[in-house]
Image 1 (cartoon, one colour):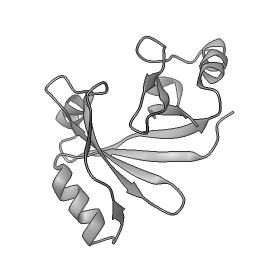
Image 2 (cartoon, helix red, strand yellow; image 1 turned 180 degrees about the vertical axis):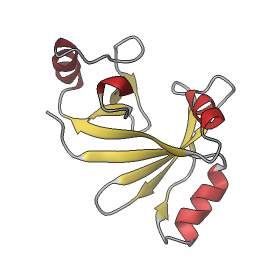
Image 3 (cartoon, rainbow, N blue to C red; image 1 turned 45 degrees about the vertical axis):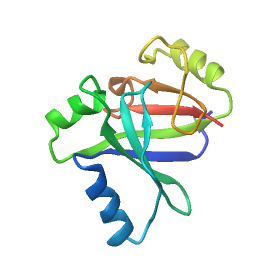
Image 4 (cartoon, helix red, strand yellow; image 1 turned 120 degrees about the horizontal axis):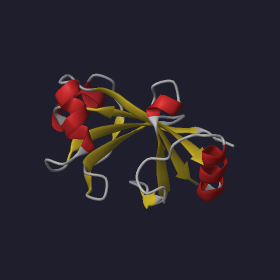
Length: 134
């Protein structure tokens, strides 16, 4: 059901510094910051030949990333994102298998302009999983 790895998301305490580190030290293709108010984050995508890295920074005090950084002040891996062909079919299959979909269970539009859902980390070995329809 899942396709390729779309991205690995890393919460960072300083978006500008993290972007500069990837651009400078690693020589990566670093995109511009983009605010995602529906998700409470500002994101920067780092384009790699085989996938992307998504840097996450809190957008507002109610951001889930602010809570993550309170517990992990240096930042860290926040989630992984897999591609799926049909997000509603994937959601229904996962729910039938006992997986918990976070939020309302209805897809939201993600940073790539495509529908996304998040799955509870306790159902996936402690890893928050994002599904993105391609």
